[in-house]
Amino acid sequence: MAETPLWFMAGTFVVLAVFFIIDLFIIGRRPHVPSTRECVQHIAFFVVMALIFGAAVWVVAGAKPAIEFYSGWLTEYSLSIDNLFVFVIIMANFAVPKQLQKFVLSIGITIALVLRGIFILLGAAIITRFTWVFFLFGAFLLFTAFKLAFGKDDDEEYHENALISTLRKVIRISDEYDGERLRTTKNGIRYWTPMLIVFLAIGTTDVMFAFDSIPAIFGLTKDPFIVFTSNVFALLGLQQLYFLLGALLDKLVYLPVGLSVVLGFIGVKLIMEALHGNTLPFINGGQPIHAVPEVPTWLSLAVIIVSIGTAALASVLKMRKVDAESSRD
Image 1: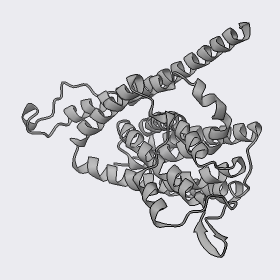
Image 2: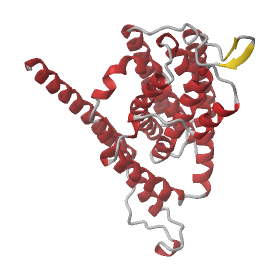
Image 3: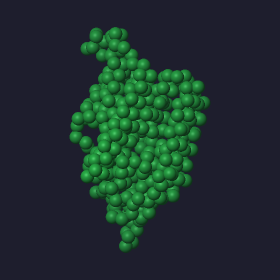
Image 4: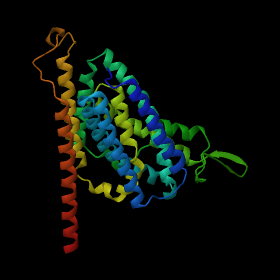
């Protein structure tokens, strides 16, 4: 059940819509390669806005929803940074010109946001009626955490999903881009440009990321408003982060380990919540197990900050060590 006043939620949606319209139709309509200064300014703006929004939630709804927002936002933002690996590969795979990449990211992220919104609504409806789904969410996050920590890195190569592969077979797609256009004419024949495929690749790939991120954030809060706003603030500024981190992404070597700790913790938390509110007849006779402790929201936030912060610091120290050894050679 949402704890945030309706007027505050309505105002938030209006402000977030304005953010996206400005980013998509004003900034995004000027194809260019953002400078480092521009990227830092945009990222700083959206980070400050997220911090202010969390404080506003604290004022109008209390500490618990605010801490849930900060926890969810940090988790989603960290997962988004990891997902930038795939965005880099997609752009390279489709040979997107650098001056068009910002526009592509704007459209793709917007598509992903709409689809995530649908996914969140469905997820909220499911967990409201079937609390046992937390067992599935928890198990999936534990599997994802193990895969991140010990599994093969799937981000090294991009594979087209079935939708895009099928689309290539049924419509004419040109080999060259025509600016931002989706349609172009060659020798009197109308073609779709590769821009269409890139939009779908970015958008649908981000939805696949939601299978990790949405269960993770539902492990931190059951409020659909907090879930959605956490996702929105994590996606805002993501395109600038893409250009800023670009060549540095491969140096964040310990980020997957930090994320695996976070996802593993949330996975265990979900299973504990499922046991605490158990209704499955083959577990404790269908009765809740009250002996299972509830994890406070402040502890979740602390684990997220320490895990991601430690991973980032360790990555920086590792990078400096490698650079120092290279300079000696």
